Image (cartoon, rainbow, N blue to C red; front, side, top):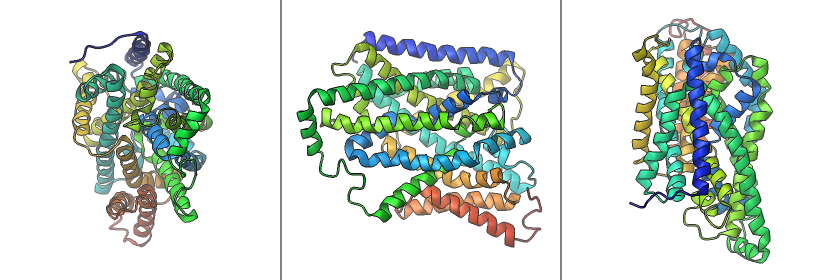
Length: 483
């Protein structure tokens, strides 16, 4: 086994890691002193904590691996992806976060299932809670596996470890501080990691731009060799296909905002609907700046370092070549922070869904063993997702996008119905969830995801199904429990 190499860059990275664990430890201490409603940190987050925590949690390993790889391999066309997402985010933030905070307070809800079943009764209310929890745990597990794959690529390149060793070490580190800090720890570490993320983004873009300008003739030659479509926004496509791409991913963004419990929980935890709504531009600004910057980094890197075998490792590869050790250490910390913040938030969200929605554990136990249940569940879920990452086929990008699309298709429509106060019953809401995920699975099976993201198809199916069954079903069948 290759000896672990420790230099200035690695020391900078370990310092940032120690700060992250320190934030999780502080959160654990505060949790012990403030046990009330601890699952959501007392519902007291200000706009900066809401916006940056939601942003870093949503800013997954895809940003520092997949986005770089797409820019490197496909060119500026892939800037359309964050811009399409921006369109969906503007719709989402105009309509939903403040409503979600208000409804969660009214329902005293910690999880999406608890919010969805508020004011509903009967067997279909319970069925809705269970199916939503199962969908979330299933597809969040595959999404977490994608984060572990991104982390493996980062750590194996940084320390020259084998793929398996890098995977286990990376995942175990995140699982450890996730189980230590809980929800409050997730928010605190997100805030620390957001600062690292912004610093790393600036350093990465400045560094690759400097190298591009340092040898413009070589850069231009490499870009030309990438192909004539590399600098075209609409390569080999029509206006119709481009519109399908834009609106498909805009729909996916709305579905992402409504259906990701690790994100939605941040809106639940805002100290008021107004404060939650005020975090809009903090979230959007952070997400768009980092996503666009990393895609541009990949585009520029193609001109600076052509021939990288795995473009998704481009960020780590670039900063191991004649770059300042301190800057490299910050980038190492940046990549870790980006992947870790998402993985951490998902593990906590999955633990809440399992314990509260599937196992019915609504209150934190007072005994020592009872308080260990949440961290133990987090650890077990972490181990399961590590094993899953070893067998899942696909890239970080393909696994992450498929997982997010399926969650949006299955859950987002029901959340939209609830948040906007549209009429529904226990039965119609349950059927809408089934219809949404079923439509998305069929759409994927038919191979149409490339034309229009399946999340939009699932949301439309979900909304239509709720309307049909509420409007035309018999009151007895629908269990007259309309919210």
